Image 1 (cartoon, rainbow, N blue to C red):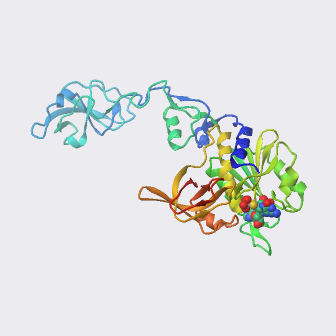
Image 2: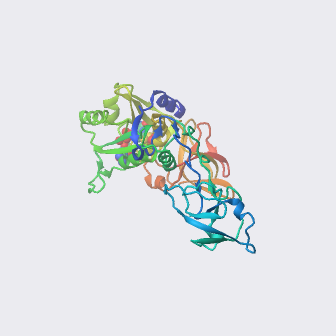
Image 3: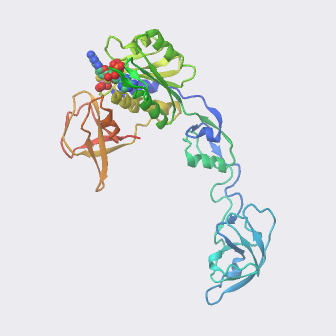
Length: 403
Ligand SMILES: Nc1nc2c(c(=O)[nH]1)N[C@H]1C(S)=C(S)[C@@H](COP(=O)(O)OP(=O)(O)OC[C@H]3O[C@@H](n4cnc5c(N)ncnc54)[C@H](O)[C@@H]3O)O[C@H]1N2
Ligand code: MOO
């Protein structure tokens, strides 16, 4: 049997980064920057006010206090966006709004709360020193500065940064398009009635959602029966022109109708292995059409989901040129004894809780690979390594936090 680490290493060795594309900013959300982004101007681009108040000569108000207020003439207003040139000199000031350019001659802003709010004349009751509430040009970013390095995942804050330096388009490795196919003649579309021996397709939905959760764009292609091998093969092949990655579930074990394995064996670099893990033992992976990674995951819902998190998720990251990090992992203390088979990496579903400065984890009651309820009620996978066969209450163990 292959180890989990060997299987993952083979997957990552075969997975190539997607070609970068130039996209409009909002199409690039969750993409990965394929160029460094540099600022064409300083940010802020000009000195501006941090407060609604009055732009003054600081020396005029250096002695202002409740007992010795200072009164200045107000010669006008400047709002954010105003382009008129205002200038002041000692003895006069301008009413100014947050974000408006500081007028020539002014070197401090007095917030309106420190004044009587006057419009022709204003009385100031507190001293301000030079620079008070002035946002200096370039104090956030200087012209030419790299604001986002290549390889940055573009979340909301990074998209905002790009817009703030005036970019409308960026070069990114896009979110991988992940096509998900479920195989099995017992499978029925949720929303339709199930007959004897039938079940609703759970994996198609879970894996499509997982692909999107992991930074891809999931496309569920529905259910393919397993009576006609030719139909299963053509359904997979039809997706290769469009998909950046294909996931199937079901049909890879030892049954008389394990059709996915049957039709893909010998194609491209497809290989079907037993991996030393529970759940998720039967795994298939390879490239079809030279470059499209195809994962054939086992049909049991928990097996398919765990296989996704352990193998597909890192590959999706690699397609975007990101380090293939595993799910965030912490060390927790088990709240009850755990038994685990020797030689297998065991991923138990569990409940992780942070209490009194320590993580505690409780294994879920149902650990069968068909028990989707216990998966859906869990927030983590307890990872018991190959060489550990038992854990006592309080023993430390690695725990992967589920998204
Ligand atoms: N003789 C052996 N039998 C089995 C072995 C083995 O080594 N020797 N391995 C077992 C393990 S472990 C797993 S996991 C499964 C994997 O089987 P397949 O990948 O071939 O999957 P199927 O047989 O098609 O289905 C298994 C199970 O999962 C249900 N299923 C399938 N697809 C879906 C779906 N989209 N939504 C919900 N449920 C689904 C299916 O109805 C079966 O109950 O093989 C074991 N057997
Ligand atoms: O290995 Mo299967 O994936 O346990 O149920």
